[in-house]
Length: 131
Image (cartoon, rainbow, N blue to C red):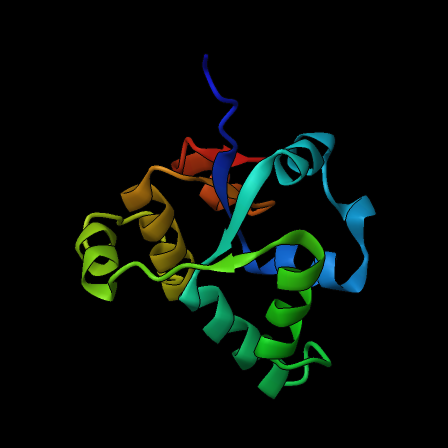
């Protein structure tokens, strides 16, 4: 008997911020469906980017506060893939100079996971983007 396996997806930084703030109306129906039906992951790079945008005052909560909250409410998990694997894939990506985007996409691509993102550049260059 076949088991229903959940899809495995990463969440981009802005999606994490929106979920934490309760701004689900910013998400598309496709992204909401994917969130509801998937095992959700966040890259360590998103953790770093969240802390960076906290430090410059663009968000009001620290990275770990946000991620711990979402771990409890939606089961979000922090990825533990080796950084060397991510870098190997990132070296092949030439469509962005945004280090955070490059590493996040490289990580999702390395594992074969989808990525929920509203970023048009990511959508245009990473076929497993869900939006």
